[in-house]
Image (cartoon, rainbow, N blue to C red; front, side, top):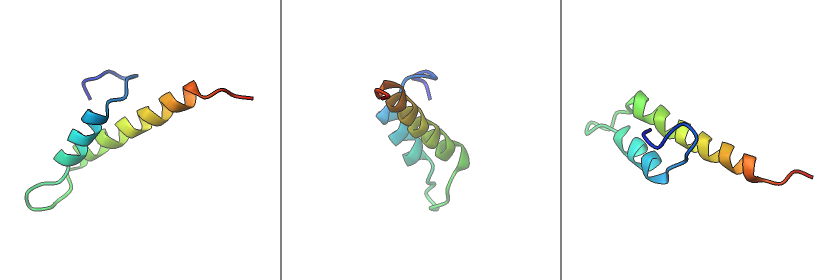
Length: 53
């Protein structure tokens, strides 16, 4: 993901998940994992911005 280790980009997640399915409808692991890493990055950013009691 080119947006950096700390920045979430929905576009990059979408591109990764779109690229993970081949024309033969097989799952490519590297783009799939890149998409999940992007979603985890989003979750981590949201967790960091929540106010804790």
